[in-house]
Length: 472
Image (cartoon, rainbow, N blue to C red; front, side):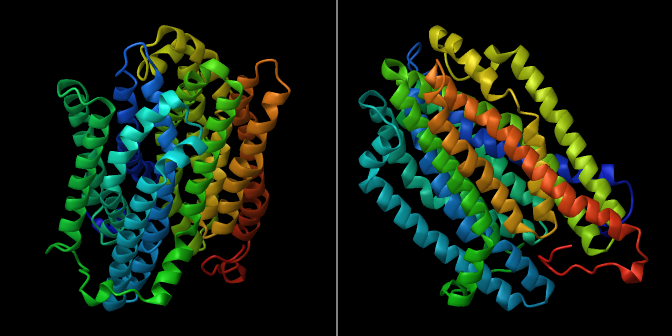
């Protein structure tokens, strides 16, 4: 295989290029999602017809989002700087960036673990726990937090593996953890009778193995850049630039945390005696959405390097073609996913629960939540295009706009005006999808797509030459 030719995004079919990039990303994304939701699937069947254990795991999701946020901030924020340094031929600087990321991840994981263990009870009650669900949430979280250092190092440093030209090794990191966790869950949960604690133990073991795999590469002979001891000493400038680059992912994950907390607390307020059941249903709904979003995330993320490459090369017709292809694929997929959920809701719900009454109760809420799912294609397409063209502020804004400016107020206000207040929490999603998705796409269309069309018809020498992060 001609490696250089395979990476030439400036020629050939844009459709084939997008698909070629999207497929492995979709596989990796799906593996990562399975890694996160497989515990919920097994835990949902621990109590037979009792759905409370699933409620417990749902209450820990905001804390998992916080850990992911700091992983983005301190780990994945440095990998673009690492790539730039390598491109400049400055391997010494690249090693320093990698070493500083390792140090920051170690320090942050220690602080998060300690804070989580000490303040676990007030945090979980703040996030919507009740006396019945707190027991399960604390049993899981007290063990899960032990693996924080493994989670953050494995995920945070995996980007440095890809940045050195080893995407296959990076994919194995994610897939191996997902496979091991899936295999160990039934052993520890059911065979050994450890219940929800067994799920947490299985997760920590899989995180540890993923971490060892990444560390083995980073410090092994195959690595192009291996950090030295001196590289681990924090450099204020490098640390500051890493934090700035990782801010986008950090904000998006913190937004997820806020939305999860507000949803749980609102359901606790209006759910009365069934509050734990409603929180469990929301956990199921979020899990289904995460699973169904794997492909659309892979599609839009896969188009980003192709679009960005052609934008930098001034091939604006190809950029517009890439945007159209990404939007079309995303729309077709989300429409198909919506139809599947509409027709077969029970299949997805039964994966997480064996409680007949809860499952029956969940169906209309699942339908409400996914009612405007196709508009997520517009949200993903708009944000991914902004990221591909180096316009991170726009991508951050529309993430905040949908989740913070729309979802949170809607989650709080809609229950006040509906006959079924609980349904208002689920209605917040489709309403925000329509408004937020449309706003993101239309802003991208008028400020990027149409302007690119005008640039494309100009003579080559008169075209705008983009700088990194500049406006068109």
